[in-house]
Amino acid sequence: MHSYENVTLTRDVDATRIPSGEKGFIPKGTEVTITQVLGGTYTVQFIGGLARIEGKDAARSSGQGEGG
Image (cartoon, rainbow, N blue to C red; front, side, top):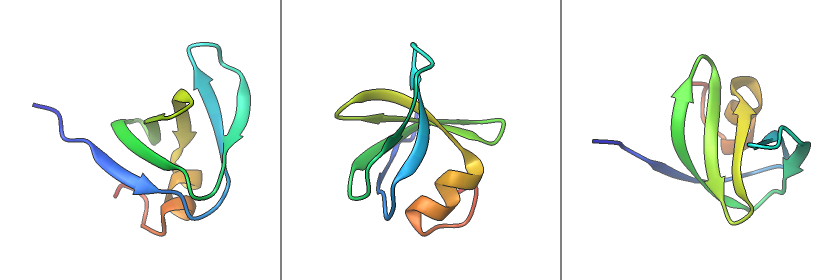
């Protein structure tokens, strides 16, 4: 069973779109659902689709420490 976590971003976050690989950002205030944590990166689902966020960016953007 998967455990998903909903987080509201506290700042703009650099992200890579899935599956296109297009670089961009997800704006502050966006609610994302963390669907996977793997190898220091987070896969998130949001109204714009799916994206990968590097762990260093995720920790700063959610107000939480890295890994949760």
